[in-house]
Length: 371
Image (cartoon, rainbow, N blue to C red; front, side):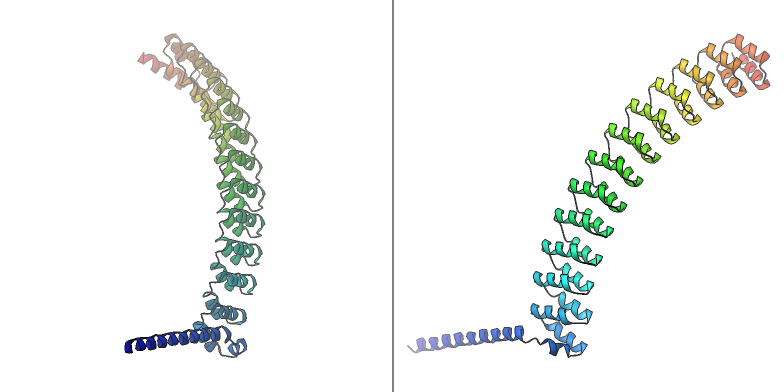
């Protein structure tokens, strides 16, 4: 019985002590929650305010310090220790200091709050801080279409993958850098075609053209774009020879025509180019790709450029054609090339005896001597 009474006494004592502690802790919390005096706080020196603020953990008091404190460092420390997002949102939307708003935003994860800040803050750095934490693409699209700062629009675009959104941005943004980034993320070729044919910036049209593989679209770009470098890019990925022929015969830029000709293998087309193109280099490229001797003979007899006639002759083996050229061409260098390929002795003797140029006559004699 003695022990039972002792045990009951100890239990009562423990329970009483626990209640006292709880009441004391509650009293401390109530005191902590209600003891902050803004006027008293502001009357203290900066050092005293810093010391007092550094030991406060009750977030409503920290929020009050952020609201009334004039020293930026104390405000920054206070806001960095707040975790309650509605409080952080209020600070982010209302504090006059961008650096404080940025810290508040950095601690927010609720995207509707971040959206409100990203769409309304007047300072680009604060909006950027909010945008970097947003992943919901409709919000990013809204920012990309509305924000006045191109760098922020680019940041939004960089995290968009939905191609209809990218298309809208690529076709409408006034900043070429934003459009360029949007185009670089698009893979749908009809959209790329639309951009390649419409964008006023040659670099953007080039990016779009380089991502297209559908040849009818590439042909349209090659025939329509005002920039030769873009037309060349399109031509470089065309293999359909009728398209290449149309470009080679009609493009005003010799570089574009040259590239088109270098991809053509159909000899009737090459012959037409070799006989028509105003650029000697292009006619030379076409001639060097021809093996049909009647075509080569026509070029060798009619081209105005001796170098092209020589190139044609170098690919001819038919002796009557070579003899005709060796006897009749006005340029001694061309006649010399023909003589070097001749094996028909009567023609060589005639040239050795009667050609106007002594070097051609000597060359004919040397060839005769080797036969």
